[in-house]
Length: 300
Image (cartoon, rainbow, N blue to C red; front, side, top):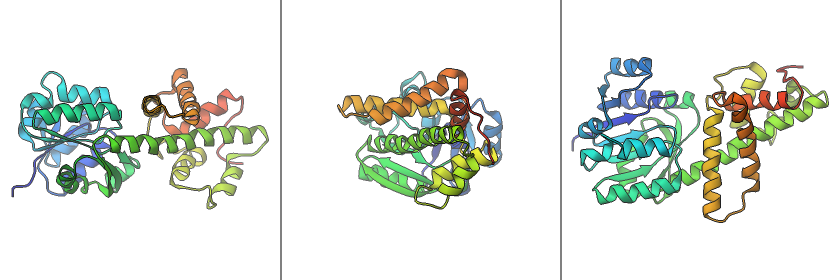
């Protein structure tokens, strides 16, 4: 059986590393033309082809991976002018974006009627792991579609969990991000409260690091807090707010109380509303400190 030809849309912070790993594993890869010419030219130099439209991508490829901001972008790529669906080919679409599960389920139904298939396969971890090929993937879809997608996902993921039917991957991703972004809001407030009492970030870390409250997310968050490493966790606050808004919509649709989620969303909405949408998540600590009238300091 001939090897699947792979298309890729979204060679941004995460997608660039993912695409490089697909190429490194020997797949024929075509990327959608992107405004980030540096990333596109790097991938073309590694052997990727470039398509001018999503339709052209679908005409060339058997599997198309999407790694874009969210559901509006996914819907436009699939159903927009010269979109993937317009090619009329029975491709498999793998949506690695963090999307609204209700949109994902609707798209899967629409695509199935056209002989196409959709797997939602959002990601966990950071651009560093995307580059290393060690991301985590939570994948929703039919068993046959998951198994077809698995070899490609394995080029950039160390862990692939089949979460259930279409939409379950994106639902799990929202829960995952609820936990991580909730940690971010708590860390930021705790640091501000500590600063009011004269406790520096250094002292805070000396207590938490290595203890029961330590975790991988804590480590990347505090790599910025303590070392001012802007690249420790390159995930924009605006994207965090988008994900928390999807979570809120999901909670409303299922009539599930989500008061903590609302509080976390408000923290991110405040940060974005005050002009910090493009800042990365650990920088929430600086924003909360400023709003609280304290100065965040990396050391004692």
